[in-house]
Image (cartoon, rainbow, N blue to C red; front, side, top):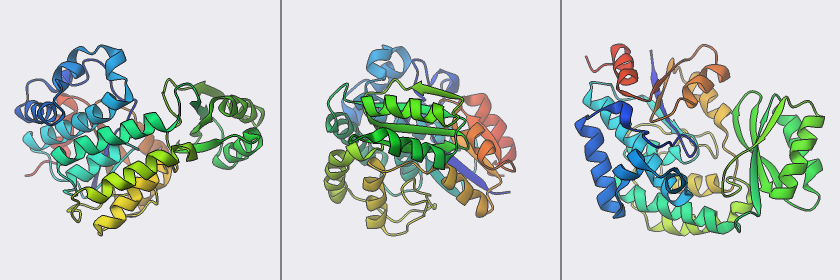
Length: 311
């Protein structure tokens, strides 16, 4: 048996998101540290919202890194073993890097807040959009986007599972992309409630700002291999990791390939570490032999520890 741990990104947040972990000391400690670093009551934002504040990109991104890392520390506190390989979906990759020892939690938080600001400011509010396309293969989605662009940007940006793709770009082009995908047989298309066209080429200015910030960040070689969204590779060199993070901002999240790469390396179990239950079911859809489990509360962690405890 070989354990991989994956960390969720933006979209898994909700008011009361950490309630299921109870009063574990590790969770309290991580949230307190985040509040101190960010000079903001992160615990209150998680517990009480309001949802409009929690869902602001500039808050959501550091909150989700905090939540994922707190869940991982809770896993450790309850006796869970260190994973053999880690990854994170989009923003979740930063949590994975903290767990892998590449960047400290305290250094990661302001970096992620800058990432959020850069992404939000790269495209004026209302100019961009994203939509989930269900029941269409990758080639058809790409062809639909090419047809719908008409001088604007619309691209396939998240390859989450077979038949589950997200497109992003200019708002009007995304709407044309939805119609083009439906014409090619998509079963459903849903516009997402997001504030920017994440991972599209419109995020180029954000990637440039992020690259500058990453140049100043203290990164170390990973203790645990991290599979990156950008190139589906694991890097030992800190500069290569920084390049992958900068590239991730304005390039697609290749999640299907990330999970396939883990399975090819002998991973048997994929545990989703953090609030929400999105990535664990996707893992099994991508590679049916994998066992997925969401560590979304204390009960989930205790179930996982029965299989991968330290003893």
